[in-house]
Structure formats: structure tokens, C-alpha cells
Image (cartoon, rainbow, N blue to C red; front, side, top):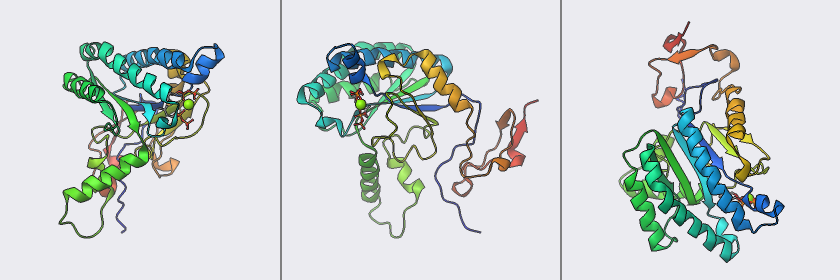
Length: 276
Ligand code: IPE
Ligand code: IPE
Ligand code: MG
């Protein structure tokens, strides 16, 4: 029998709160333009939405929230906007990190941080350290992040770490070197602002995420809008390559799920217990 080597390990779930939500926060500029304000006003308002989104996740029991704050392509924007975005990021870290710490939030920043100012790099490191023991919610900010950059840096680090290795590499060999090796793959991907594209976000990790696009601009993405995204997610049937008939319906709890690579994500009927 052929060995199945996919590294996607999630157990199919429906009607549950997603464990990991990843968001492309788009539409700040258009929000500002609608109000005849400078684009930066939209970014500033967007930080308020980030605050509310974190609160929502804490209340809903979402364990991982990943936010795309600055892509590897966003350097192409006017210099002034890039510089203001960096200042905003720095100020938000300075003002919010103690609050994150108090609320049980662990902060992680992923992306190529080397082009950032020394001060910003140090602040990021200190903020991560300050919140490192928290485990209620892991908040990941993707800054100067690109999905292609992530895959490539992982490949390079993997190969360098195993100079003796001959033969082929597997998905599981690569996984520990990806920037978000500490998190499960996203269950739900949200993009605000009306565009329906991935814009080089988590290319590897989104393989089996449920996608949700909304026209709502990021500064207007409130708890009602977030709840609508969760509700859409809850109506999806996640099949991970299987047929609908293979999935057992109803409220389920999974015991002894088989996580071996060849059976990744496969829930055998014997491992399912129906909660009456
Ligand atoms: C997203 O909002 C924020 C960043 C990319 C930093 P935009 O700035 O892309 O807003 P629009 O798409 O121009 O409205
Ligand atoms: C994606 O938004 C990046 C972030 C939200 C940080 P963009 O607004 O930069 O994406 P494109 O250029 O429209 O694809
Ligand atoms: Mg945009």
C-alpha cells in the first residue's frame, strides 16, 4: 500500500471554534480615503481593530491569532508610508506589550527582521521575551513576511542543519524550520478589504485552511463581522482529501487520534466517541 506522507495533521472538525485564525488586515488606506483622511489615519484606526480582535479571540477561546502587518512587498510603498508604518508598529509594541502580558497573550513576530532598525529589532525581542510564558493566546505578527521567503529560509536552514543527509526530504523534515513551527496550521483564513488573494501570506501553512473573504475594510472589522466569519467557518465541512461519507457526523470527541505521518489526520471510526 502506498505510504501517505502529507504533513497536514489536523483532525477534521466542524461546528467548533477554530484553533488558529490567520488574517490579512486589508483596507486601511481605502477606509481613510473614504473619509478624506491621509492613509496613515487608516493604519492608526487599524490598530484599534487589532486590539478588539485580540479581545475577541481571548473571549472566544481561539488559541492562535496570526496577523499580516507588513508584507515583503510592502517596501514598494512610498517611503513616507513605510516609515510611518514602522513608527506605528514600534509605538503599538511599546504601549501594548504589558497589557498583552497581563492578559495571558504570548507575542511572536515572524518575518525577515534584518532590514528593521536596531531599536525595533530589540523591542521585538524584548516583547517576545516578556510574554514568552503566556499560553492563553499566541498572537503572531507577520512583519516583512512573505510565504516564499518562509519556505526558502526553511529549506536553507534544514539543508545546513543536516550536511550528512543524502536522499529525499519529506514535508515533516521541513516543518520544524518554518517560521511558525510553534503553531498548528491555520483553520480559518480571513481577508478583509474585498480582495480575494493570498498576497504571499502563509503559502505552506494555508494548505487546508478555510478561506473567508469580506468587503468590510479592516478598521470596520468589528466583533459582529468576526462572529460572521466564525459562523461561516462552522458551516464548512473539512474533509482533508476524504469523501463526505467518510466523515462521521454529529457532536464528536476524538480519542487516540492517529498522528503517525502516514495516517496524519485520519480519524478511524474506532477512535471516535459520540457524545450523547
Ligand atoms: C493594509 O491596508 C495594511 C498594510 C498593508 C500595512 P492597506 O494599506 O493595504 O489598505 P488599502 O488596500 O490601500 O485600502
Ligand atoms: C497584504 O495587503 C499585506 C498586508 C495586509 C500586510 P496588500 O494591500 O499589501 O496586498 P495587495 O498588494 O493588494 O495584494
Ligand atoms: Mg491593501
